[in-house]
Image (cartoon, rainbow, N blue to C red):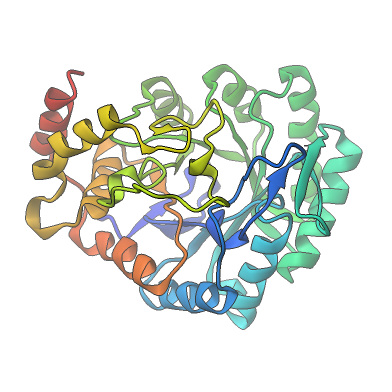
Length: 327
């Protein structure tokens, strides 16, 4: 099976089979209560070098959001891409409201008027005249309001501001509402070897959508490091309710680590690192998947991109992982 590239659903847009998620390179930001929402401090120059290295290694899909680092991730990505913007597929998201000066998430806004303002602001920060994939970032938005936003996205396509759109949600019913639009081409949802999402994968396969996989490495648990100590600006140091696998201030959950250990032989088959094996599991899971692991350094970019050459796990290895996890 050819794994170097995949088609982004019914859009016909070709992307590298591996995308890079740009949440971490946004740096530190927080909610109104001071809860950290980033991954700790970043070095912008290293982020730019890592993006350039990813480009050199064949990565052509970059996923960000306006709220990551409250605009900072988009700015760094736009600067790094520069004249190579047309060589890549850029995805971003809208729906969250934030204060760039204090780097604080202040709420959400599901109005059509805000969607247009948010898109114009993202285009400015990214330094581009269009976004390839525009994604609603309010996972639990009202489906009736989402239908209006879907129709607005069709207007954006007609205006040439975006090429396609998607909803970042873990709810198959909500994803199906967006999928009624002609230029909806994907669902972004959580998926990794520890957290399967059979209903969403089935929806993508049925409706010719790409399955864009956030948390492909389970927030780092599948990367092979133990995360005993997490810096205070790291979201995993004070995990919100939705973030599984990490105890409050205590690092990784021992039960989750035991599952990772049980999978080690399967994931490190054929000379893979644990992270590369976790990405290989996703490619084997469905021809629709496009995992988007995060990165903060050239070394992480190289390790993640190194998974492409090794390709997906075999059907037998996929079945073995299910057996180990009791699925």
